[in-house]
Length: 167
Image (cartoon, rainbow, N blue to C red; front, side):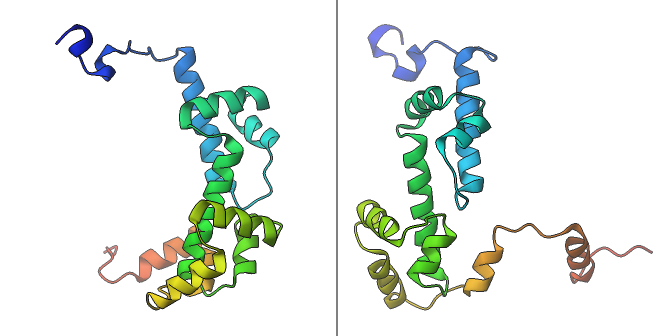
């Protein structure tokens, strides 16, 4: 097919590797990955932009063009998504969850959570409890993000049933 009948993706010119567009996508992906890894820490736009290697203003424009939202809004949404997971499965109260996902104000957290999810955090947690038992104790949830030390990983592999043994 040619002309207007071709699918839209087929009409786009290809972007050669190393072009400015590819470099921009790599930079905004770096910023998004940085937010995903550090969402629970105090983050500001300057820190996120530094991780991408861009100025704050250029990052906001490029990030919004790539993902449809600003880095600040993405950070807020990511924190609320993680809060939903914790409220659903962890034995933690709303205030603990608020602080674990990086908010410093319970009021701001509750307002934003309600805006994005449609119900308050406490209502969300009550509804989750009504739907069944929690699956994972809170202490295990807190350990999810921590990597195992190499020594513990080696010990775990050695104790694994059926693990290969040196003869």
